Length: 318
Image: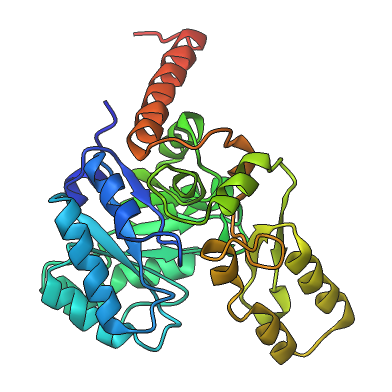
């Protein structure tokens, strides 16, 4: 019952996109999400060998015939080569983060690729619309990983009013209530990262998932603000070291040295004390690791139930 313009645009059953999380969103997770009727996304932000991206795309194709996407972190210097591979491999959807993808949009559009940038402001949303983006993911500061300053509830309706392309809400969404709230704000769908990281098919280290299950409402913190690239992570030893550097006014190169390899240490090696465990503020809602299909169906069922409950609270005059 939740068919939206986003479903038609991306040729998916449900208006849900899986976030492209570096070291977390691999071919297995992306394929599982796509097979379940949403849009799975392979993260390319951490990839240093372009041919590894090609291999990941190939793995997705082996596991599903459904549409999927690749997420490009625009700070990665290999992005131009990644775009070439995406075109060569016929990837149907590209999401982008950490910048303006304007220089790549015409090339991707001409090849039939749907381009969906992640934005954190009205200004960037309007700009990518002018440059030809098919939709935008509007990400609030509640999200895990790299974030902006505005909250999802404040930003989404403002962007909806500012652009004519579909808006996807992200940040602080992990269940049917958040999904339904996003639609009420005018979004055509949602993007979720943290919830899908705690899925059976996600191959992130089990220590990462255990941290998620133990997390409470105040267990995330924003680090790295002085660098201009704030990141929301779980509070741990690394987070405390980052915050200490902020108080001391440490030079940027000190931040950079501390952060090198931190995400990989947590996601791949399982060092959840000295590594960077990215998580959204919604992490406290996650109580169970489930198969992707169950996560999606639970969200849709809860949203339907909440919609029915709301209808009983409102007297409609015909």
